[in-house]
Length: 593
Image (cartoon, rainbow, N blue to C red; front, side, top):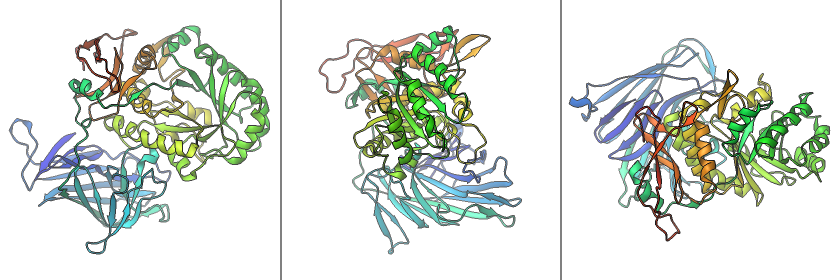
């Protein structure tokens, strides 16, 4: 990650592209980058290296008005090379991209992408040449369809400035990425309506340019005070933050027995219920379910089910109702290869589950986009479920904010679609949710997909993200929230040589359990701080120089925490907090936040 500045423009040059692109302190675009999607819409990595002008004394970035940077990278696993340059020309920033195709290859996407902060509802988004522009209002909710399409020039408001984006080399489209758990709009090429796959043939390099120019508005809105929050500001930020109580928190269990010692350690996180998978294509599903329900009984006493029901296996639903009655609260039904619950399956489940005490669940086990496109749930549904992701489009450094910052909009839209039914958010996964169920034609069995390993589970990022996610969701008021991938051999810990070894998320969840349901001042994720501040204690995720920090463990025990004795006034309350309001976290290795 390297800073770059020229002519009033500043940005960070990273392996993911140009980030935090700003003009005189106003964020023009969260990121400009080159994207390649393979035929399955997966994103191969494109590690980028940069060539920059010599910096100023003291390691400061170059600031000359005509400073130019170059970059180059290769698309992992593909015969494609990307190169280009970034240069300031007057008040405009020009980013040039070149794509070299070394041998023929089919892809779903290959071209530049520009991310935008979602404009205020109703704000004009204009496309077309000067003098011939057409405008559409920014959507009031999350747009299930492309916001605008078929353009080469785009004009929209950003952070206190009006931004013009000129795009050469292709035709572009803009979508609302909150559908996939990312709090941005994205302009990309080509439009989704074009025929796929795109066939790339060797020859002359394909050239693209992205030019950003700005105009500062005379009445620019005030900046969000959370955007630049630092640790010492937390007490002040409590004022005006929403007061919230935590919804019941559950954990997922992909299946299998757990020994008493492991169960005891996992129970320290205080789950209100356990989310289980039932694969009706498995001939041993009854025995597996009985075993898993016993785990749920010991950990929480209650269970929620995701039921994978291939066509023709609906006849097994009465047996399911009998097996889980008295323990399971709801069963979310999905046909194989269908991302949302069908009317047919929900109605069949209503008849099978009648009298068992198990409610019919419907919704999406993939991204919210699927439910948003459907725009409704079956009439037979009694509770509506939506999966959320921690990092659908961003790396760990940005995902703490871009994921949770989209949750309020997702919850609002999901609640509208649910039409008064209880709203259940879960599994709330660290990985994109297509990793938690097998898409069409996937060779991975559904249980293997549910139990898929993820490198974030054992990381400090995973624990920090859990704190930030719960802080963002607490103020939205869902009926309950479930964290994905957290029980068993991975998630909150791992069983190594017969002993349970907790991951950092175990300490974070145990701390939340100890804090109780609240009320809290819920700090939405800003650039540096996110968390829950209670009357006498709290849990705060902090961004430091080396990344986001959270409670970790040392020798199997939670680390010690210092406290900052700084009074804070919780919103809607008259009493001043007499005890510590901010926990300063440390890891026993000299680092602290």
